[in-house]
Length: 387
Image 1 (tube, helix red, strand yellow):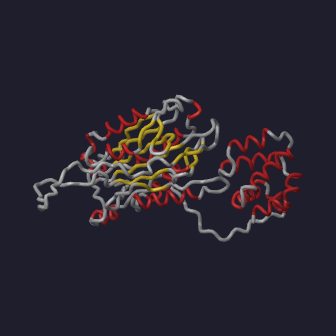
Image 2: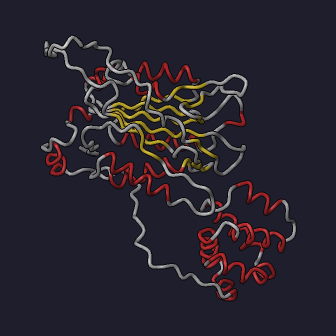
Image 3: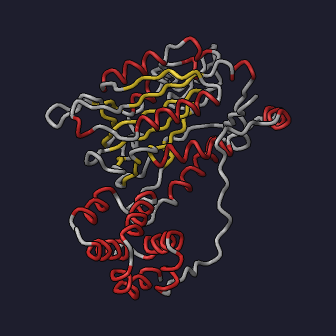
């Protein structure tokens, strides 16, 4: 076990490690999310002597367990191979599968693949005309009235998602720093957009702080809550209020966070928002209950909440993380997965790959796993980038 190795070499490490290597280890472990910004600062600022910093570092990492300790040993081997050998450390990990190679640009679908999938009745129809009319809504709250709630790294998330959606053929309707009421108004306005009649699908991406069943508007304070109810998304875009999107996939991505101390490298994101599925109004059409048969006179009744799929940043009761420079782990993973696999996998497969990728960042910290929610897609939805 790696933590046992660190315990064994603790004294020699404290005596011999250089200040330069300590700094390099701190940077590497911060980048890996083994340490958070507060822990790094405490190790440096509360220990003015090199040996004390070394002792605090190795103890902090060792106490986080085997995975965190293995990360530290890996960094030590990379930064100072001679010291690694001197300490008698080893890396005896079991053989691991080859690491996934990720694409920095969106891979495109072949015409043959597109034709093949179009002839399959289990897939949502997508035409070149509908791709040309795609539209998405992107809402990002970054700066709050209470500056302690400002979301470092959220600007990068906004840039990444706008670039991804645009490359998938979506016109991006973008809003930044909205109150809860303004978020609701933006959804209502979007539900009336002229392109909805001609698109094959929509994306709704909302990134802000959150709580159970809601995301927070930028005017939020403890004394005067400013909130947007997640359920309103499904109501505004449902069959009753948005007939233009009937039988069309509606993809919801929510990165909702509770907050964190200013300056943190990562902050806690509350993924509890939007987990309830009750309270969705059904069709207001009244059917006769007098014992007679139901006649078809040209009306077709459809469930109000259908053709939705949602990805939330974490499961109820857990947290997710956002890097102050690179943005949230889930959004980073979303971009990587879509760039690499959207050309051949449908949306549910992509969501599963995102969940797996985020789950890998579980070393040294309490980590969340994103969750799919309110899935009512009736067919497979392929994005066909490049068609």
